[in-house]
Length: 92
Image (cartoon, rainbow, N blue to C red; front, side, top):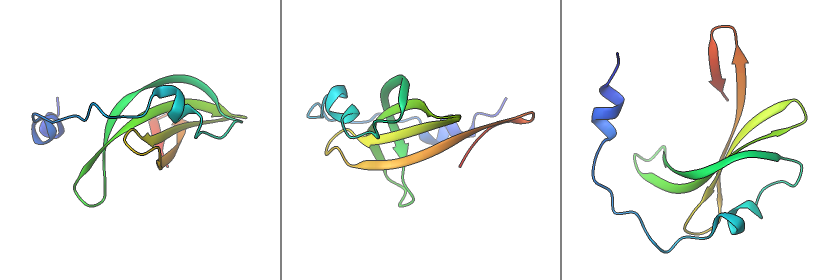
């Protein structure tokens, strides 16, 4: 079992209570995406910081996506396409 990621990222966080609603975040999404799940998530940035986001999982056509909307300002932070392979699930 690999635990380095958990141990390196597990810390007490001060999560803002002043965030946009899930519905406000959903309005920022492309209307072609059929949402299958949504939740709050903390995502890492390339600058070694973290951002509180609404995470939406959904499909557009035959493609699955993860879309991250900043929970504090409503900005789209990231979109990842999910690729299922015989060797596992990848994101790009």
